[in-house]
Image (cartoon, rainbow, N blue to C red; front, top):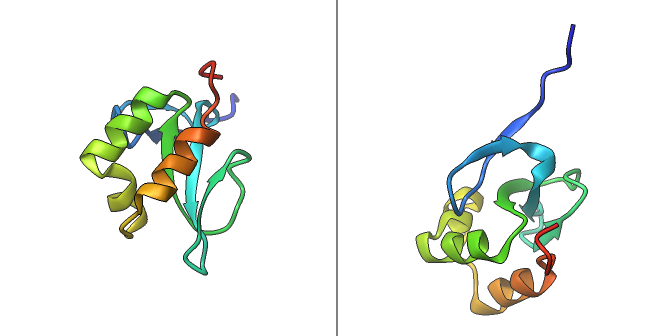
Amino acid sequence: MSKKIPMRMCTGCRENKPKKDFIRVVRSPEGEISMDLTGRKPGRGAYICRNAECLKKAIRNKGIERALGVTLSDEIYAQLLSEMPADGE
């Protein structure tokens, strides 16, 4: 029996892909927003493709804010963009 691959939806492009293809943005129980490259940090998570274009779409459509239930500042978005892998992987 094959193991089921967990699927998630990107908050930018709205595509379903395997969880390992995403970067997770997490809101910790204390309310801090951070990138979760391991996918294991505790807290509420939103998934984003590993490219800056999807992050920009998620910023425009407020997908990350909706998924995490918070309003994000421009500084947080700038930090997320700077932490995004440059080569898309």
